[in-house]
Length: 436
Image 1: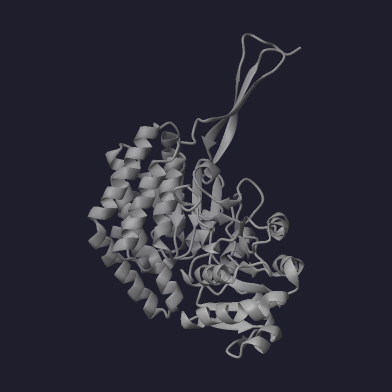
Image 2: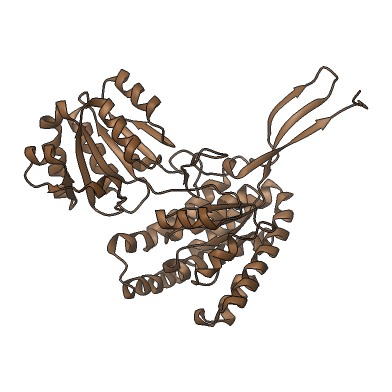
């Protein structure tokens, strides 16, 4: 039985005190470190067998997972969680199937561990290779999306890393049920259950201890709102792969096809408003606003989206609410979109540089020269041309899944999948050479 199972079954949430939490977190870290050593030498077949068995366990335990999720939703509603966050939290049969399919997709990916990135031979005959290796133990702090529990655990398993998962407090029961299924897969493959562990308390002090265990944890991956990221950046003594807020933009250029502009804007905002790739601001070239703005706004309003805009947009469409300065810097994660008119691609670039979060931005235009200007000059992790921002997802990139979109510049940027959770070592082969 895993530490997670032991602790959740033997204690109530209110029973944890400061000393208990420190002991808990050190215990999770120590068992994760031991599991990481074993996993680093596991075969690809073992890891893939564990992932596929975990997917099968998710399907066979669907009823229990949905019951656990119902408890989380009830807890969230009692706490006054808004509807868009309930949507992030909620599972149904199709979403559980999507989680299981995601693990199978990860299993089908190439194993990055041990792959040779590059090999070269020096004049003295030394053969040098750069070989991918796991990072070690990864602490992942994320919001209340249960699917991230499986994605993060699965990606860490495939890339040879042990994972300590601290999901949003609202998803505690759902995440625990999912991790139990992953443990079933690990047992079947004869791998340690401690390869994937969940922090079994809602107490925020657990995050503080996780961030200050550099002897046991190698990398922290935070994904969530600005306050979470700021706290982690301030308190962590461990290197970060940071997932900042998704303040994503759609820019409709004068060269945009009207029907394409309508379809992309509606999808970018309304497909799922609660995901980090959802558009939050729409920029429209002033030269084409009279053509593009009315049908786009009509589509949004009919879909139930609240539209806020600057003076120029409200002069063209009466149903737009006046935007405030704060709107240009707000990640709504809800059915709200702010709209501003800009002077061509230069105006769009200026706005995105001032207000974007360097996550995901797209341009809609049939002017390919303008598109190239946008793609080259927007400094975001993901930039798109004539495509929805909702493609900001590791699964859509062919990575199987991802544990976040890194908005940083060091080590990994964009979707963080199995390859991004590896480092490398140099393997040098000689024939008796000594250095003079």
